[in-house]
Image (cartoon, rainbow, N blue to C red; front, side, top):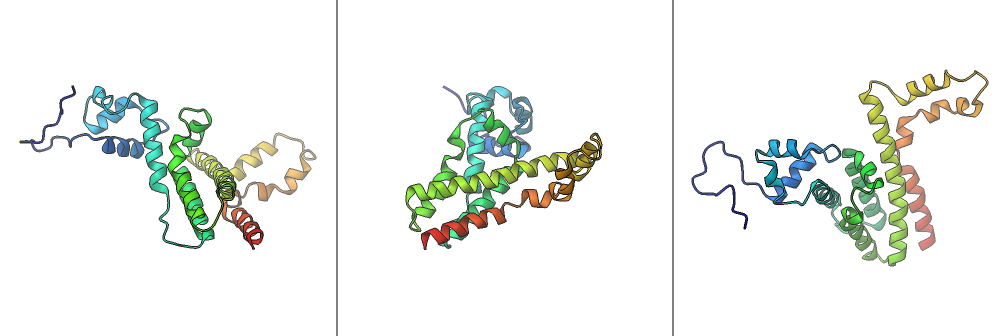
Length: 221
């Protein structure tokens, strides 16, 4: 039986607050899930590393719970807005959530955790659309379209952020790369170089999603 390591009576000034699962997950999110180190997390919380394992089985379990918590918190409030607006709200929330932790995409691709981290977010989206008259398959099709567009833009945003952290840009990288080819090589890319290097356009998910929503609206009459 695990005794409470932080009994509430006569707590001394400056003593760490009692650890809870909520506090553990919130702190992990705050520190960043991609490079989370359990020893550093324990030190930040002011507890021994063994204490963490009273709440989670291992690092992967902690990240899975924390990522699920983060995804759930990012879901927008359904205040009865029209279906198009609720889709855009979910899209903005997804882009913002992934933008704060872009490496989560890599972790997901590498199957370091499963789909459980997104289930509540997806269920909220589907429920919101079904309440607005969408059939389950229609709602899922729209979710998949939205997620593909937004996650693609989020990956681009993460890439550009990494370039910026290294003191460079997409345009500068492109110029350097083209410099290794002969002037008559890659003529089509050279003609579209400015567009290719446009970081704003590459991360702008709204125009593409608007086109999908326009088509959905027309189909629904």
